[in-house]
Length: 211
View (cartoon, rainbow, N blue to C red):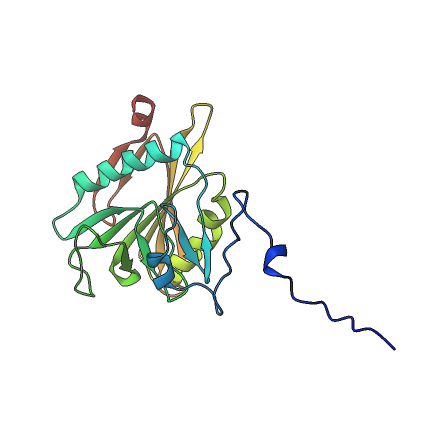
């Protein structure tokens, strides 16, 4: 008699556990959806990429201070018909809703909803997505997310990285090529960010050293 080599399902008691003893969450069939991202009790800045939940690591000082600097500058220069939002999900599809560090959106929105409790915006309302690169987000911010933002036809993308011994921000700006639906670089900004799109803005990037 030969014995079956088919492995038996692992018993729940044998399943891998988190450090606190609780079981690791099991994704639903077909992966997580937007409703799960908005419903589950997740850490701030958790995002949904291709049906998988991506949980952020601890935020470093460069990331938080640089985001504060750009948030204030974008808000102060914003025309009346746009809003600047921090860490709000951008809905690209039912299975993908990344959370940029900052976005500029059209006020009112195409879906007719709004309010201070809003947690997501459709991609068609977003005119600019900004990502401040962290050690755990380099590949996503340099490759995965700009590709998806461009495919969703978000007109402008900024990637901000630390450089030099003082970790001053450098802003890489991109614009959407409407023929290829990919981003093309429009500038690399050291010390001072000066742009005309999505609206005129000048930022002293060295101000981070005094914040």
